[in-house]
Amino acid sequence: MGLGSLFKRKKKEEKEEVIESHIDINHEDCDACEKCSIACPNNVLMIVEDKTAVRDPQVCKRCRVCVAICPNDCITVN
Image 1 (tube, rainbow, N blue to C red):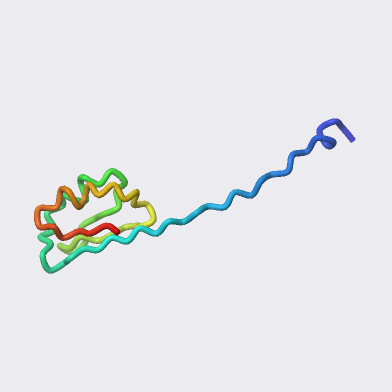
Image 2: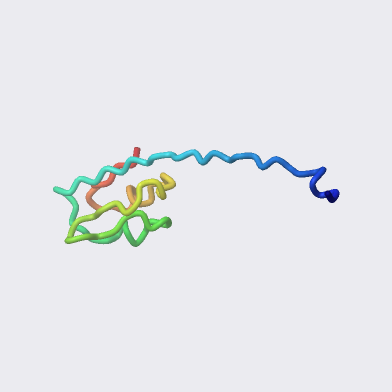
C-alpha cells in the first residue's frame, strides 16, 4: 500500500445541464437564401431541399444572429 492510496480523491460527478433551445422557422415565408446558415456561429442551421432546417437545437447558444440577418423575419428563437 503506497501513499497514493491513502490520499485518493473522490471524483465529483458533474451533471451536465441540457438546455433545449427552441428555434421556429416559418417555412412559408422562407426563401432558403442561406444567410442564416452562413451567419450562425455555431453551425446550427442548414439548407435541406430548399428549406432551412435545424441540425441540432442543443448546440444553439441563443445568440439570435440568425434572427437579425433573416431578410423575411422567418426565424424565432425562444
